[in-house]
Every structure is written in structure tokens, then in C-alpha cells.
Length: 65
Image (cartoon, rainbow, N blue to C red; front, side, top):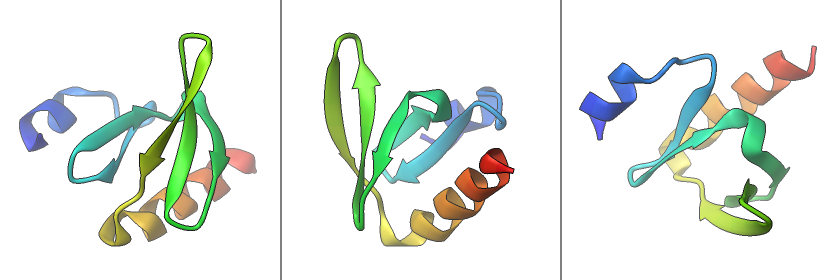
């Protein structure tokens, strides 16, 4: 997973779980321990790992400014 993550543009993708790297522009909603992303025409729920949560929230706050 780290090899794939290192090849992706960091401004576009973010790791949110040991098994998930997502495109930030697909985030629909952030919940306490998960987030919803748009995949095609449906919304999928993705878990957010405890060790990735702070990084995700900081990244989203920077995007909102």
C-alpha cells in the first residue's frame, strides 16, 4: 500500500485506513469513524483508521480555506 501511496499525487489522494486510499474530491460526508465517498452513481461508506483521522481532518480543513 505504501508503494502505491507514494506514486499518487498527495494533493489529490489521502490514506484514510490501512486498506484505503481515496481521492479527496470524492468525499461526500465525514462521520466519526468513517466517511462517505461517491463511487459512480452510489455512495460508499469507508472506515477511517484512528491513526489517519487527524491527518484527514487537517487536510480537509486546509482544503476548506
